[in-house]
Amino acid sequence: MKSWNCTLSSAAMILLLVMPAPAEEPALPIDRLVETEREFARTCGVKGIRQAFTEFFADDGVNFQPHPVRTKKAFAERPVSPNESKRKLEWAPEFADISAEGDIGYTTGPSRFTDSSKEKPFVQYGAFFSIWKRQPDGVYRVLLDAGVDVPGPVATLDPPLTKGPAHKVPFSEFLGRDEREKRDLARLDLSSGNALASEKETACQRLYAQDARFLRDGHMPAAGQSAVCEAVLSQRAVKKWEVISAGISGSGDLGFTYGRFEREACEPGYFVRVYRRRVGRPWQIAAEVNLPRPPQTPGETSGQPPAASVANWGLLVHSGAGNFASSTLTGETAAARLAGMKAALEAGYRVLACGGSATDAVQAAVEVMEDSPHFNAGKGAVFTRAGTHELDAAIMDGKTLAAGAVAGLKTVRNPIRLARYVMEKSPHVMMIGEGAEALGKEDGAIEFVPSGYFDTQEARDALERAQKKDVAPAPASPPRSFSESPDEKYGTVGAVALDKEGRLAAATSTGGMTNKRPGRVGDVPVIGAGTYAGPGCAVSATGHGEYFIRYTAAHDICARVTYAKASIGDASRAVVMDVLKNAGGDGGVIAMDGNGAIAVEFNTTGMGHGYIGPDGKAWVKLTREDSATGR
Ligand code: ASP
Image (cartoon, rainbow, N blue to C red; front, side):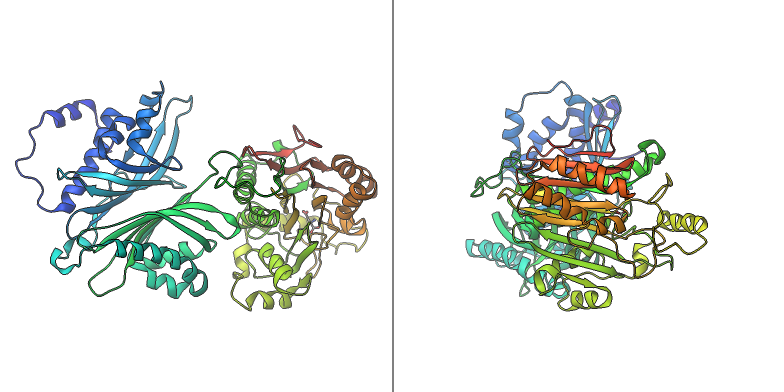
């Protein structure tokens, strides 16, 4: 593969090094900038990451590791590791733009990181974004550098280059810069969060340029206003911006800002923005990067511990019980479930670690699993016998006993969001079907999707299998036994959490049971059956819902903890392994008490579950082996 990267053969490099410098410098600043970027990539291939970054960063240049650091200083202070030579970073610019005056420019394009120090080489694809500043000696050096990971291989590391429009504008058209203008840019950052939250598309089209670019971790880069707006608006609204630094080109046409933000549910991140404008026109965002901002050290946020900090704050999730063994799931399904639960734990952890509430954390975790096709909740929900989807969900705040539950939803992308909405925006606790969906439409806060959005082949196959087994209508009572087939579709999802202020919460979301009658409602949205949280106990259940309703399973566990002073582990075990099992009710629970002690109990052979605590290390399991109870 021909590319400007670290894999150029050493013979080629020697040739490049001994070749005389070209007689003339490329005429345009943008060409010099692009050439410098390419030289940076070549140098990285020859001399390694440390040396290349040290050579090509400005003295005050910053990159994110994952927090912003002065790059040269950070490399100088970091001890050399024996594996450094086994780590390769390759990249190439595919877009570049520069101010009319040529003092500030930026480049972006695909990257690939390979670490061959491990037995199996690790490869991570990404996209880089660099803001360059012309130094007093005329050379370009990196001022700000932000890279994101992308989910799949990049198409090529030798992309064609597009040049942005700014470099074509004559310098004389512009006004120059001053401190006031930098403050204006920073103010634009601050106001854009509110504008995007309230006016959405209209604000996005005003704020982002036609050819804008948007990079965020875990996603392919978006280019062009409509793709950018789709990506920007699919995220939770930013509720707090803090600009760390801003700069404007001498020609006043290109500026940048970078800083920290927090989204709703306290999801912290860093942003980098490049702004562009024409004379007499407002600034528009030409490029933006969003990066996650993990706690500086586990559990620490901005240095302000919450008033009453609980040592054992944490989050437990489940992804459905059933009579399966790890070995009967295909490797792919098992891996997808484990990865989905891990992502859910990390989403909830980000909320808890930065001081967010348990309610926000369980919602964030459940939403991640609702968005994954690998669980029976949101996308991937099972089918009713009529070939439709009817989704149930509930959320409960253990401190206030506020609860919201929804049942029989057909077009709400994230049922747990509507459950939360019922809890906070209506005087009710439980709402069903059309009435619930109508409430969600009132102020546009809930996203709706066509019902086909929930379809997956896996769920369709499960329906077919169930209908073959079950030609006669299912008897009303006792109901057919729960998920016996090893390849049955499992995957109700749930979470319980304890936050730093000692508040507990529980949330559960499901498509119900494969082949259920339209109109059947399971235990999940029945407060006290499949979902419950009180001041000292929170439970989310999964299993044969009819039994969990009749035995008010979740509340029974909490009642034992509250009145009989049972431990969370004993209470959960008694209800799942004695009460439910003796009655024939298959399933399990995750539970947590007010000290953060956890219980994972299931009377089936499998139940996906996982935990994350203050150390930020997630563990996930699909079956009983190594499950942790009564920590
Ligand atoms: N409990 C759910 C229901 O009965 C199903 C499950 O957990 O898999 O609707």
